[in-house]
Amino acid sequence: MAKFVFKLEAVLRQRGHVEKEKQRALATIQAQMTQLQSELRTLNETVQASTDDLRDNRLTGKLDLHFLAAHRRFTLATQRKAMQLVQRMALVQRAVDEAQQALIEAVKQRKAVEKLREKHHERWKAEIDRKEAAQLDEVSMQMSHDNAARALADDAARDAKAVTP
Image (tube, rainbow, N blue to C red; front, side, top):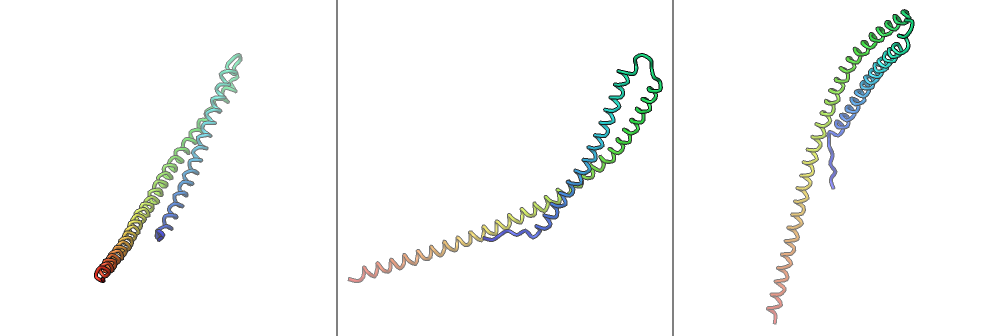
């Protein structure tokens, strides 16, 4: 039986490799985004814990103005750091979007070659089926011819027996 050979198999493999590379690049950038989100969440939790401690423990009795000023400076510094993180997250988000678009394009390129492969396979299969049908027709014709020749020979033999007394 004939074997299907796709001449662009190397191109299909290469496009598959490119797609995997784009997936890895996207995963790397998404990991950066996850880390930045984790940092921002940690900053927020730190400020929240510090503010809760201030409310619960530092606003009763004699007020320590130096501590309150230090807390305010800490809160402002943390807010600045959070703003920087948000700016970095915006840049990383653009990179994520670009990586997603690159991945989508790589998938399209691979699928286009796969579709071409499917069409070539369908044509090849149709050609094989056509050849098999032609061979079956040929065998059928030969068998029919052989059967007809035997029938004629049998008829001739019967006629010969019937004529001989």
